[in-house]
Length: 276
Image (cartoon, rainbow, N blue to C red; front, side, top):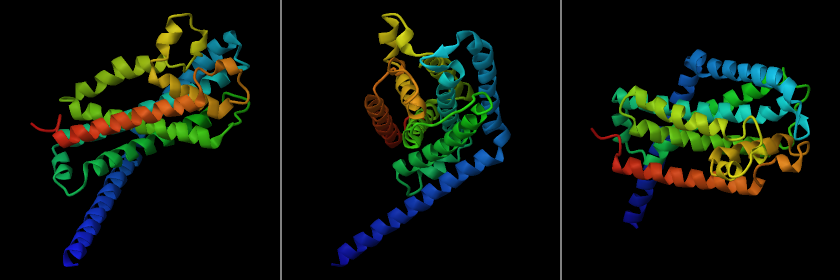
């Protein structure tokens, strides 16, 4: 009986320490987001606004309609997703690498917090930043389109949440493996940006000839952009405009999250990229 009571107290103490630790990391990340808002919020909003002006107004006026809607309306979901992907990734990779570079990450690693708690804390910070910027970008789009009736708020929010979670996790991995500040720019520049531009942000991959359409389906961002576009304008777009089935898109995103989250926990347990 006494051993059971001790075990219960020990379990409660571990749960309490993990909850306090999670709360501390999340507050730190959100405070950082608000404190340096000219660096975290303003630049992506300005960049996306330029995309609206250049691609939507200038090029869009020549393209005309795309799959039953104006070209400007068509690219809105893609541009919102692009801001969500970049923001979630950049928030975690810069924050965690800064902690690693300044050596204060060691205090977190030796704490009684579980590795999953540490990972979820940083991911939550990235998700908050991504959803904040995504919402602002969606509001900015109202200045460029006549109307933006969202087909399903639930689908739209869920896709954005899962996508932000996935790329925040990816940013955590990049930060773990990076040895200098230049390393945290390699993946966004040479991997993330090309995949985003080729992920159906500015066009439907169904317009591509073979074998490029088939090759594009190996790009994970295609599934996120397609699902998000379905959440916003599923009732207005031509059926052929959807690059993937909605259920299949959710399945692929969840699969990527589970695999990447499990891999990151394994890396944390082994101390990969964290031990001198």
